[in-house]
Length: 92
Image (cartoon, rainbow, N blue to C red; front, side):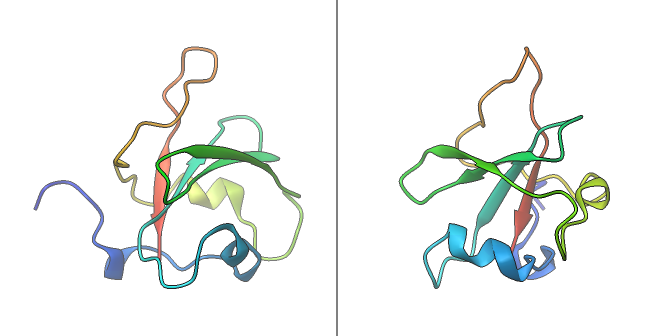
């Protein structure tokens, strides 16, 4: 095993997150911003990270529990915030 989370073992997305990616994609990376549940970066097919503002109290969003999910190295590192490496989770 290479340390990457296999897509089948990755957690399912919250339904409201599905609009962030094209249908049919299997590798959906999200970089979490520690200390700020209202922001997350989403990795798009074009190889770039896009910041999304989210409602941390919205249905299906369990920001704190996302930090307990297995981390997965993305193909391109997310932006660094204040010198921190952002934790990245792979969803299916």
